Length: 368
Ligand code: SF4
Image (tube, rainbow, N blue to C red):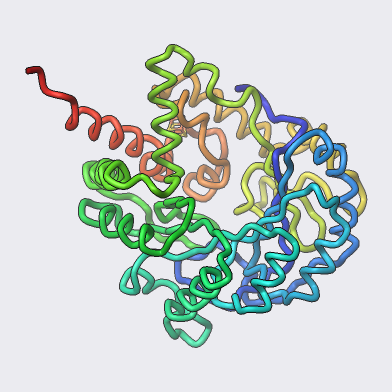
């Protein structure tokens, strides 16, 4: 894997910067402001991605703020310019989901992923602007999805990865009925400057326990565990070198005003004296393929990040699994992009793989 691909697999779009919640771990800088995406931005992206969509499966992920906070009429206007072959996804806190939103999802084939951190007591960070817990509203939204038989994925932020937590969480998500589960150990990113360093043995044991819980009842696609097992199987088959994509997916994030940030949506809206505003262009003035084609040479922080990825390749035994992790974690933890290890990659790449291997070692068949 070297450099950045010219064709993405998906784009992330920000219909509004506004979120109706105020979770204490949130990284978003303008979540109290309702900066809305004009329809011209959606038209420009729809036109730009048409060749990508025609060439194969292509997705638009509507991410905020809270994408539903923009309202059905506005979101419908933004979806309208896209080719019907494009798959639409929303990443939502679920609190605004009602019958009308469910009809909207069904009519337009929108795939839904909800953010929920496990049982009520684990959602203490999920609060509204008045400081009130949001959990009951989150669950009400999810119940509405279930009532309409809309399949959904779930994203869970874990602030204290340690033994005991993983089994509780996995049991909760089995009952919740999600099809896919992603586990994000809380990251130090954006306006969330809380430390994310944890005891290494605790984090490894958390992942090992999660694998054990999943193996007992693997009804959910458990994103991190499935990645790790795919990697472990490829190592055993001698095909691990082929597992990483040949080039990094650029993951273009289109901010509400049409500006494009590549590789890490979390960098959108930030500014640094050295790197500027992290954008590589704006779809209102330049077609997306043109922005992608020149990004690595024209955007200094991306060139620096690619040097960091090469440093990872040269020094880290986990590179074949991780591929160098995410640009935003390097920046928000180290203030630059050409470093290697971060607390994020220790928690979510290195300890994850070690946890999976620990689980495998502890469950080896014993010789007769
Ligand atoms: S685990 Fe960390 S140090 Fe290793 S390749 Fe990934 S980002 Fe780089």
